[in-house]
Image 1 (cartoon, one colour):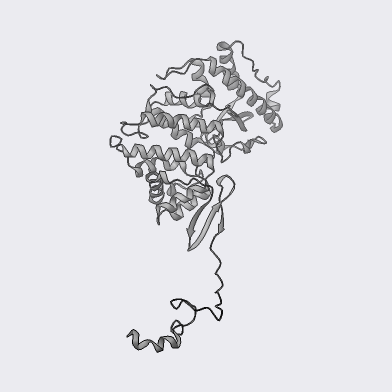
Image 2 (tube, rainbow, N blue to C red):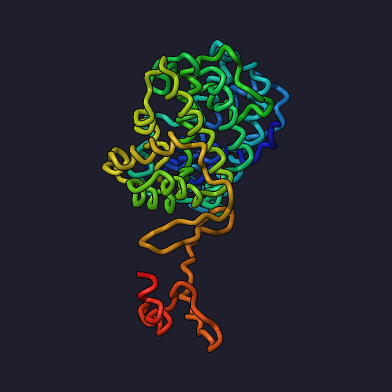
Length: 389
C-alpha cells in the first residue's frame, strides 16, 4: 500500500550572498548538508518549463520583488518568500512529475523530469555553500528532520529492499558497482515525487537500485542508528554477539524494522558465493551510511565498528522484538526501556534478601545455614560418627 505523501519537498532556510538570496531546497528527510541552494531566477526558469509542458498548472509562482536590491537582503522578506516558494514546490513538482512523462525502466526520461532532477538534487558547488556563508533557518523547519521514520520514508526504503531481495541473487560486486548517475537521479527523485510508484520496474539495473538505497541512508538528516545505540554498539561489540544485538533496542521501532530488513538483505547477499561479498566487506560499505552524522572519520573506518556491524549481519535473525530487553554491564543487570524504543536504563539488580530466621522446632536440611556448617551436625552426628565410619 502506497502511503499518503507528506512533506515531500521543503525549504529549510536561505543564505544571502552579495545581495542575492539562495534558498535551501530539501526533499523529505534529507539533511541540510545535502540541500540544493537555488536563487529565485532558477525557480522562475523551472516554472517556465513546467508551464510549457503543463499549461493547466494550478500552482502559481510568487511574483518577483519590484525593488529586489532593497528587499532581497532583508531576512523578513526572504523568510516570507521561502514559505511561498515552498507551497509552490509542493504543488507544482508533483503535478509536473506526473504529467511530465512516465518513468521507464531503461532510464529514459522527459526533458521536464530531467530539469526537475537537476533542480532538487544538489550540485557539487552546493556542498560547501552553507559553510562559507551565514545560514538563516526558517522558523519551524528544524522539527521536520526527526529520528523517527515517516510512513512515506518507510515506503521508499521498502520499495528498494523489495526489489533487491528479488534481483540481487547471482550479482557480483553489488553495492560496489557505481552504475549510472543519471538513472539513479531519476529513480531517486521518482521515489519522492511519484505517488503512484508501488514498485520499481523489473528491468531496472540492480546496481542503480543498490546505489539509491545507499543514498537514501546517507542523505537522511538523522541516521537510522541513533547516537545512544551507536555509543553502546562501540562499547559492547567485543564480548558477545547477543550484547551487540541488544543495543539495537535503543533504536525506535520504525527504524529498527527497516534496519532489520537491510541487515537481512546484506546477509542474503553475503551468503551468495557469486556476489563475492563478505559480511565485513558489506559492513565497511554501509558504515558511513548508518553512523550518526557527527561521527569522526577514524571511528567510521575503525575495525571495531566493522566487526560490530558484521556481527549484526551474521545474526540478524536474533534482532530484538519486544520493547524491553535486559543487558548486562559491569556485573549489573539493566533493562533498556523507553517510549517507542528510545532507551532509558534502569537497574534490575535484585536487592539482597534477608536471611530467614529458623524457629526452634525447625531442623536444617543438609546443613544449609549462614553459621558454621560444622555446628549444624551437633551432638547427633558425634553419636553416630563411628557408625558412619
